[in-house]
Length: 217
Image (cartoon, rainbow, N blue to C red; front, side, top):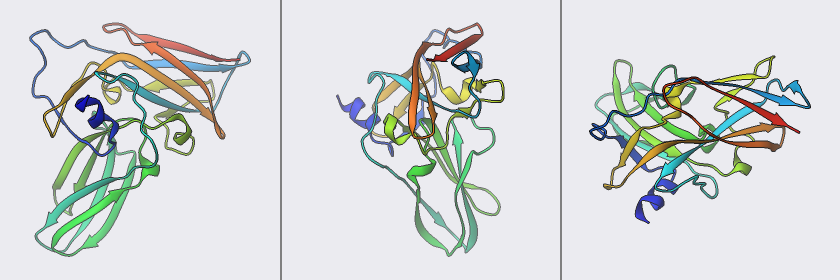
């Protein structure tokens, strides 16, 4: 299926649909949870996600990927590239910062900064935003171990996930005319050291709080 193929490519540019169906989209609350190992809180564990898409399911890519970003400058200027989770807020990484001459440019977002989920990049010069777009990342478990996590557990083993950054219930369209929805199903992956120690499949219910206890034997 063409849509599935587009989803598998990390660099596929996504554009938010301007509207949803006639029915209002579901409203989700922020997610909270705790990770327990042997009955005790697991602290400083990395928490990753894998979204479920319709169509497509829980897709995983193969191999390393980079996202190329093209833009133009009218004058020599300081350029900064920021990475965001979908929904905005503060950037979680700066992938580029340098002074560039006028003309056309292309920079790459390194694979090591690309966590799973719907992400956004932004290119800014000294005065304004000059390029931005959304893209999707779906890495296999083996490539999550050294990645920036979606979140981490605290001293009590607790974790928090922002509802907007999870993109649940949102619809997207691709630059070539395809589209997909992010469903309410989610994989929560806990990594520690050099292994994925737990994968928990959950369903996030709308219009209510969602709390997930993840137990590692």
